[in-house]
Amino acid sequence: MGNAKSGAMSKEILEDLKLNTKFSENELSQWYENFQKQCPTGRIAPEEFEKIYDRFFPDSDAKTYAKHVFRSFDTNDDGTLDFKEYIIALHMTSGGKTQTKLEWAFSLFDVDKNGYITKAEVSEITNAIFKMIPKDELDRLPEDENTPEKRVNKLWSYFNKTENERLHEGEFIQGVMDNDSALRLIQYVPTK
Ligand SMILES: [Ca+2]
Ligand SMILES: [Ca+2]
Image (cartoon, rainbow, N blue to C red; front, top):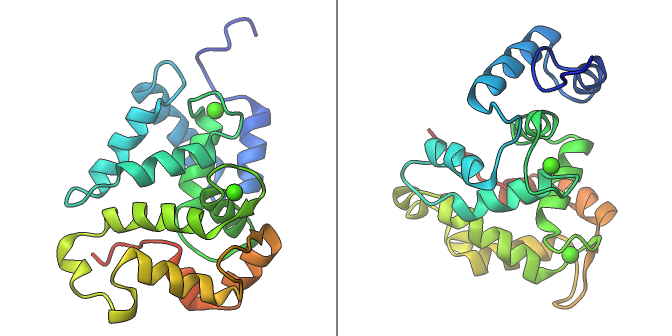
């Protein structure tokens, strides 16, 4: 009571995170301890988040993608990530094809947060993903997906939409569920 700034995480947040992520209570406590050490303010700013991505992608430019990821996890729109938002981010970005992960992917692509994805938004995120792919890997991409434009066209064709139509969340999730190639194209998983 009183000083809510330090000490253990609240029971409410702990229960919430146990329910919504794959992490155990022990893991969450460990994450929380580290988080408090590295972020004494209890908040991660966009620049710090970008640095985390930089460390994971030393040979490419992950900044733009990190900005989009940050936006998609700042659920209360206050310009920072608190512990809960950060842990949800770690959980969601760890890959896989579950309903909640695809809901997150939808929010990542819905850049203007209006509840629909346009081809322009797919293009924006795809360009950010491309900047993250190191040069030697770019050279090895299949011919029909080795530029952002080609990849956007390929991905968009999976959803059976015309150029100016837009996707709502259910269509996006179903499209990716039904097609492993679509899942591969909406993300970048480093090969090493
Ligand atoms: Ca926030
Ligand atoms: Ca949108």
